[in-house]
Amino acid sequence: MLSLFEIDDAVGQLWQERITPAQVRQRSIWLPDYRFTGRLQLPGVQANASDIVYVAERRSYFVVVNSPAQLYEYTEDFALKARHELHGFEDPEALAYDGNGNLLIGEERRQSVVTLPLSRLQGPIERSELGTLTIAERADNNRGLEGMAFDPGSQVLFASREQRPLRLFEVAGAVQPGAAVSYQAAVSVLGVQRLRMDDVSAMHYDLQSRHLLVLSDQSRLLAELDSGYAPVSFMDLEGGFNGLDHSMPQAEGVTLGPQRQLLIVSEPNLLYRYQRVTD
Image (cartoon, rainbow, N blue to C red; front, side):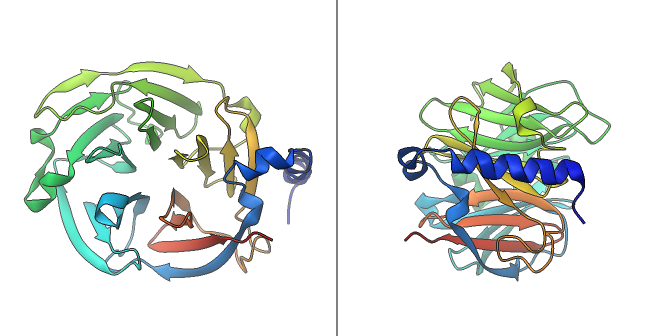
């Protein structure tokens, strides 16, 4: 049963969407247009699926698993193409793509971003041989770096601290392809009070709309933010809403596919798929 606070949030979200002008909706991702089309178990993954990203150059989806640290590559139809052990990685929770041949892997406790060139997927993946960037001091409370998204145009990385306190960051100089070199990030902290989310578990930057998707596991909510970080649209991930017969158990990752499909990864190994439907 929804609490009064959750009902108040839902009413606010509906009002926000209702007053959004049609021209803004057309150039947005616009989550109310998406419909649930099915759920599947990710081939090869047993547990701890943490994030997902699509890489057009390889026509592949990548999924990171935090324990044991692994990286999975799938076809566009989610047939398993490859599985890679991530040697030396600690608690990889976030995944992004820089649009220029590099995967970015975020480690929660270390609060570091490791640059993994796609060319390195041909052999062993050793963290010690890759460039890294530190966003903040180590977080031993397991509430550190949780979500990432990358804007190839501005070369800015968006990152989130999960909660206590919940933070969004803009990070400059995130891509560090140099081998075994560690950098300290230049970080700007963003206000997120308008989100009214209990946590941030994942993010995705959409280059077409220049909007940011922000996923909350605990609030069971996906929000679309504009370039000024103002909410634009929402998707409720609770049972009974948006085609779900039960609540999404633990939403951990989000991305858009080649046909602008919306995909959400949920622990232990579930993938929820949505397709945009317009009149």
